[in-house]
Image 1 (cartoon, rainbow, N blue to C red):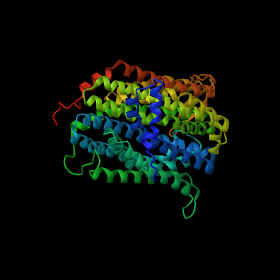
Image 2: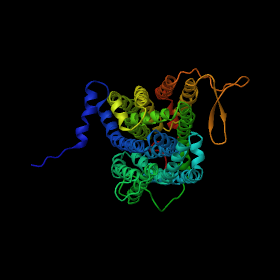
Image 3: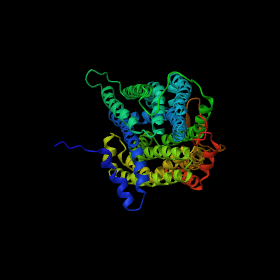
Amino acid sequence: MVFRVDIRSFFMWFPAMLSRFGIIDRTMGEEAFDLAAPAMVSGVFRVLIRMSDFVFVGLALGNAGIAAIELGFQYYFIPFGLSLALTSGTISVVSRYTGAEQYNKADTAVKQSLWLSLCIAVPITVVSWIYAPQLIGVLSNEPRTISLGAAYLQVVMLGIIPRFWGMVASRALAGVGDTRTPMYVRLVSLPTNIVLNAALIFGIGPFPRLGIVGAAVGTLAANTLSASIFFVLLINGRRSIRLRLGGTMFDWTIMREIVRVALPLAGTRLARTFGRFPFLFLLGVLGTEAVAAYAIGRRVILLAMMPAWGYATAASTLVGQHIGQGEDDRAAAYGWQTTRLALVTQLIVAVGITLTARPIALVFGTESVDLTVAFIRVFGLGVAGFSISRTMRGGLRGAGDTRWPFYGTLTGSYLLKLPIATLALPASYGFAVGPLALDPIPITIGQIAISPGLDLGYLAFFVAILADIYVKAVVNTVRFHTGAWKKIARQTSVRSPKISD
């Protein structure tokens, strides 16, 4: 007798159980979970890759290496955030065209996204290669950290172009309801990243010992492999969406719609990323161990937060498709059901990570275990807010309403997070802007203190992190609750089968 395990049916017990407790509608919950699960698996693998970077580099180079890779990653987050914004426009447009059964236009949207991604990725790659030491120098004045961070940044940014294309392909497939194919691609490329990281950082076997550069080479190789697989999959015409090498090269109407949806999201991502620069600088004033502990804590808790990425993708797809079919109320119901499911999922994971914070911190080889544990637990307190914020944003994105998440990010990052973080510093500190770095200097009589520091230390940073997370959750939830996004959807041309193809 041959026993076969239906993996999909096995995992469907989770939404089924929640429906029995009246938390979610079973049909909607199962549909959302089915779309979100592959994206969650892909996201978890992606986070584990980044965690492996920090673990291996921490074991090889200590806090200086961890701080260097964190600072380098802040610049990597700029194009990564832009790719997420651009591909959010892609998933919004593709899902609505699919719902309206305009499949040729959905295919054309993929090509427009590819052109846009090249226009963004190429100049960023060139600038990062030329000015890497200066860029890292903005965030640190420690020579070893700058040297390590610049070496990492130069190589890892070479993978931006394939990373952009991989994101475009992944989100385009999600827009037609296929979240499994991207998961399978990640299952091939991401383990390659881990193996190369270990081999190249430590010089295992025939591989040279490259240290922190080895982590960058592993990421570059994985991005290239992933992009190559996606390219083959989308040109062979066997998927519900494809990249057509011939035919129409430019469709300005579709390109404008992608840009319209993406611009506020790009602003949201950039606002969050650039807001992290002064935050990291303020942490750096307290020492390299503070930056390292923050970096580890953030990477670890991303595992708990990662389900929200999958549920946000599901919300975008389901809301967008039902809007495309003219079913606004049903689109709203899917948004709320997906958010409930996301919240329960993430809280379960967050509790497990928070309770095991200390043994997890020890794995990274950090010299500041207690501080790292504290950051992990603080981020754990923010998981509920992150879950709601990200999933609600996914629902708004599916409708093409991306402005309010941008407003929430501006409020959280700049009106709350940074002002609260400055309270960590002594009142006797101000800042002088140098040519390559921001250097803390003591204030003397006659000078004006820029920092309203109250010497609150790490408490101020902990409060700042949580305030930022929860204000975004409130803004996105209130916006979705108002239903104003339905009007936005009606105003866009990508709607309903009544549109001429």
